[in-house]
Image 1 (cartoon, helix red, strand yellow):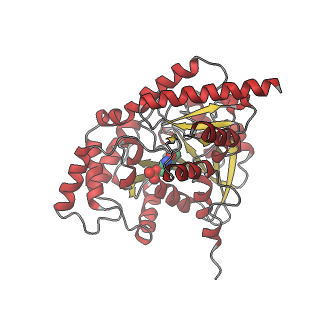
Image 2 (cartoon, rainbow, N blue to C red):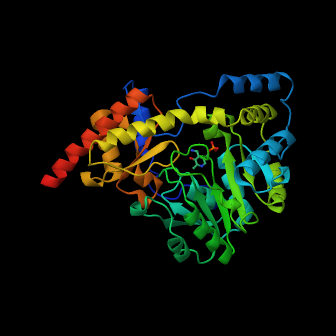
Image 3 (cartoon, rainbow, N blue to C red):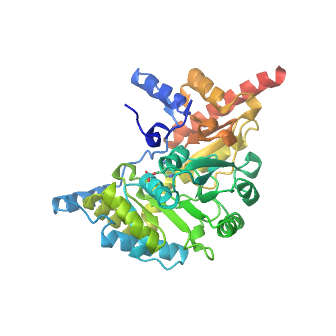
Length: 395
Ligand code: PMP
């Protein structure tokens, strides 16, 4: 039977860049000790106090259908958090609670793209982006960012691709590059969106993981609140990846339609998860800092280790839980390097190419194992790269 293009074209054609990840998983299943630095999941679990609130809520009866837009309390809590952090007036009418940031990304694109419209996204990109845009029926068009700019976008490169585009998806702090976009970059993007009458979809799920500079939400820029949909999530900020709780913040009209979409798709988020999210957000920045602390520490460790050699380039890791390493001196592609590293040292990293053509010759290292093993792995990666680069230079 014929299946719709909506689903058969979600992942596009050819390699999806996850071969190293699946090879590592197979090796682990066969009993090999593999150092896993591929995936963006904390090595700590959801805080017991959040679980206790989840338990209290569920046992207290919050296990039936919850309000589809989100509970009033959680929508108010998210609105207050956003207003405090950005200064933009925000109420529950600006907020839809979603089952995680990924569902929010999909819903946001469905809200602004018609079939055949062009949705822009920046390369390198988080793995699901092009499929999410295609899933909404739109044409996913990448815009390159450059390694020499540490992958910060240039408005003129976006402009050059903007013909016919109705939306632009950005992500700051960025996965996989670690870039945290500054005021100038975001102002350029805001200006472009207004001139071209485009929506901005701003993925801010790493907003609590900033190591350098400040997180700026482009919704706060003049004229942007009416054309920006912000995607947020409890996953990264509170180590609640499995709870599936996120949100979209945007203009009330768009949120109204997005609530209709939720009624016809997800039918909301479990009430006991929403209560746990309220509790976690009420714990304030101290809990967020506690969840972010291991990544802050390991990033500092990485700067020390990588500062002691000059083969592997560390891109400025300004935020999020990954390091982007430039391994081009080895003469290998990111994919070639990642496979060779897995073969030689049983260390699994993501090839840059999995995140788009712009990240060729790079690898992404997740900072998600304990400090001692992390440091050892980084030293091994550097030594391995130095040996390969020596051979490359001799050829
Ligand atoms: N955006 C980015 C950039 C991500 O890295 C992720 C998860 N890795 C998500 C969105 C989705 O996160 P979740 O659905 O768990 O909120």
